[in-house]
Length: 505
Image (cartoon, rainbow, N blue to C red; front, side):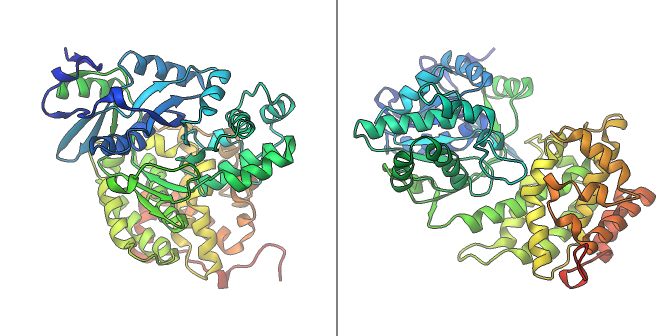
């Protein structure tokens, strides 16, 4: 039995665990983080903990908040241990643990309490990890859906908001009325242009309610884009047992993650910021190329191994990466079709980054699951794979491997629920994907024609031909033969010079 984690028991924690050496009683809040889960604690909270350990920025401690039932459960767990979390970096050769003390409170999951804290002038950054679904994006356009019923309800009754963005808007209006400075809204979610997405949500509501307030927000509130990266699996009994047995700590909500962390942020803050560059955060003028690098290499890499890994019977990512054919397939795809589409960035070595990503995916300690990577393909593919495919077609580059990735996903959608032991199809469009995948052998457009996912890419004849050819190879010879064929020959290669859109001459 380990030591129950709390401020009083820190002195009893073993010497192998780094604990806060700073006086947590002297911390003052400066950040309200909404959606406080594992990723925030492995990433932003860990950066801040390191900064506090250097004797810096003690007025930038974190208050947690959230609007979902899971947030209240997290609040109860963390309250019982004085807002402390054990964060374990899982190195291939071992593990290193630290108790992170950057958090000082957690707002009750009640809208009025959240608005009150947002309006507190001590809060100068409001950071978010609310997942893509929390931004009310229209599936067809990818833009903020101001007609969503919950958004319309907040617009109708702005003094009693129920959505996060309604709460942010109410708090900004209060701060403006009282002559207080606004806060920076800092999205830490894994979606392109995350700051721009947050800005569109807040200003989209404001324009419907108060054009003057909307103009003030546009002129005074900062919404920097950021790129975040640290593979952080869900916490299960396995992780709790690891922390207890290996480090002697009883933590109700520990976090395990890879040792790699990256955070690139546009240096646009309207109410100051902590000196995060002192602990390795990269402050830049434009994050877009860093963001594209991560989306195309890491996230597209996840998608590229997910479905073939599932089809070949793997359950864990590092086991799939131990399969030489899968590693060769991923390396060939990225070398031939991903890296050539990236714009050069001074000081960034894409080849070295790709090699590091390959190492990270092979880390056996993480225990990342193939099922996690397979889930929600209808939202992941448009972010990670389809932009690379569209760019390659526009530049006349081969998309043979990207067409194969789509064919592997399609085949997985067809067989997953009927194959014992395979991760089931978990997707908001599961029924439609399953039905379309079963028709795709005879008619590729049945799958590629799902407009919510592919938009007009299904109109590309050459892509259809390559996709159909790979589907036939997979069904006749199996997925392993298909990825070997691409590795060795790159068959079904198409370029924009060979394609024309349906209906064009």
